[in-house]
Image (cartoon, rainbow, N blue to C red):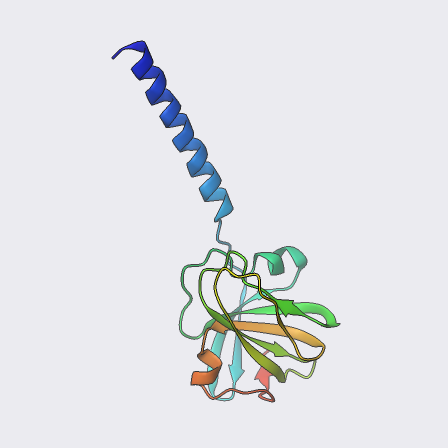
Length: 148
């Protein structure tokens, strides 16, 4: 192997390592503690995110989520809240929930978008599920979420 071929191969190898490192760190998927919730007779296994860092990570980079799995965003206090789908790969529905644990409104969200989906009034929680989950289970605004 001549010197130019060796230098070229070395360069390709280093570029590959850098790309692998960047891809791995950018797409790190974290999991969070899980709580059991119910909506009527339906059981939900929800990961809980309750601080700014975890809420910002949310479901980013996940490729799938189980049928009755979700993520519960716990806010520090009731607030005007909006959700978006930056780096989120799966379509989701979000239920905004008030301090009495009742659903305020439900919004469908498209993957990898920056569109805001907002609670219609101050919310204490947001529950993300696979898109259409609430509709399939006939869960509507006013439904109480137990176990929060």
